[in-house]
Length: 371
Picture 1 (cartoon, rainbow, N blue to C red):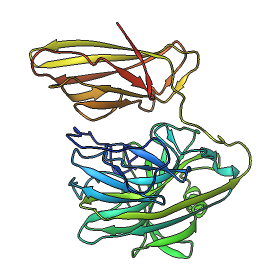
Picture 2 (picture 1 turned 90 degrees about the horizontal axis):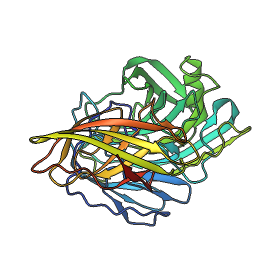
Picture 3 (picture 1 turned 90 degrees about the vertical axis):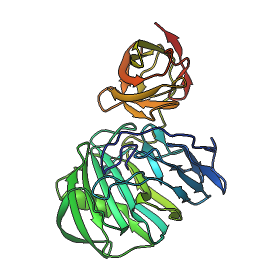
């Protein structure tokens, strides 16, 4: 899910427009409304609910309750032969440096003795979507970026959509029949289990699916489970879709990655070196770690001055095109040692006189600016 780039495909994220958002920093109460593109909050002091509107600039809003969430507005339209427009979900574990409170993940598969989950969905008619339970695994105990393996359990699908790859057979897991699909989206491998008819609620062993994937040779017991996520991938419509309850219980031995908190904010300095002409500009952005501890996974926040927009970027995953933007590390440049730096580039347009952003945050902590 799509984690910010979910399994269907990587996508260029467009401007968020004039979307409003209410995002709480603490545990969510009923009627918490999130419209911000990657807005999130916590529930029950244990799980994270995220909007994760990664594939469209159109509005999507969710209402977060004490046990789950409901999509209240979904205005994007995706190509049904391609990727969905978002993956609003509730999760346990770590998702692009945002880890759920007190999580025991990442944890090595060999050290998990039992792993169960309970999920309840509410569906609507007239929309094109899937209801997907995602299981993410990686050879390393990473808490940032895209994992190497995604297991998708399709509880329901409506419309002319299909999983990544192609069908490779059928199997029985948890007393239910599943059609198995296997493929790759170019960023990670995907194995999907598609239910023949809609499942509205289920208490099941997540470990059974991980074991089946291992038996197919796609992972080994030395891999790490990094997160469990339940939500929807809408292509068209989707207002009214809801996860009404979600829980998971994990038992095991050893450290296996243990309880891994999100990366701590670091002391930082950002250098924005720009070259502008007529109505265009390029910028090389350097993030320097001026602290004494390494940064493992970074998210840089900044706001472009009015009249500016980004048309392309490199060495980063960029969220937004104008206004408030976030730039995240990609697979190979997420680690910044103490005294080290990482850089990425942008190209864009501007109207009138060019100006550089004046303030930056790294993993939520303010940075100084330099030349």
